[in-house]
Image 1: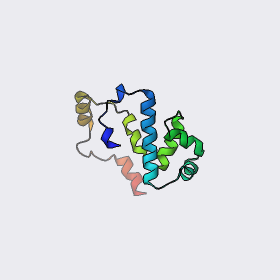
Image 2: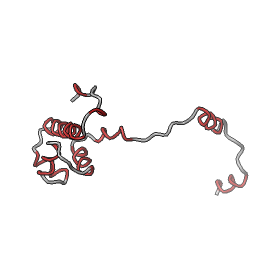
Image 3: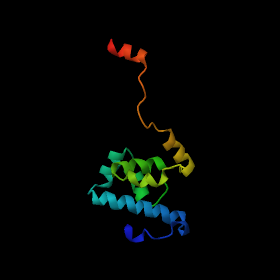
Image 4: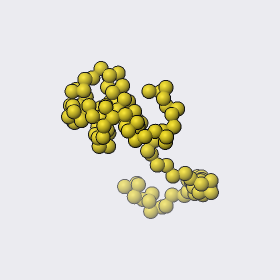
Length: 115
């Protein structure tokens, strides 16, 4: 699968992308030496649904997630993680607000600690 990772996916048709996902699933299923029946049962889907996925036919996102989980390939979903960038000014403010040293203990708190 890595040999085609350089392809500009934006220029690919939806059908071609779905077929590539299906090929990915089939490749990893075979690498684990699992039959469609076994993988489908472990994923909680029918064998025909798995077959549709591997052939590049339309299936639900939930089905894809179930199959990726069984194949131990959920890491491919990492590209969907949304991380808000922290501006340098906000980062400087956070650093400034960090405690630099311990303060004096409140005498009332100390009394409770002794109990």
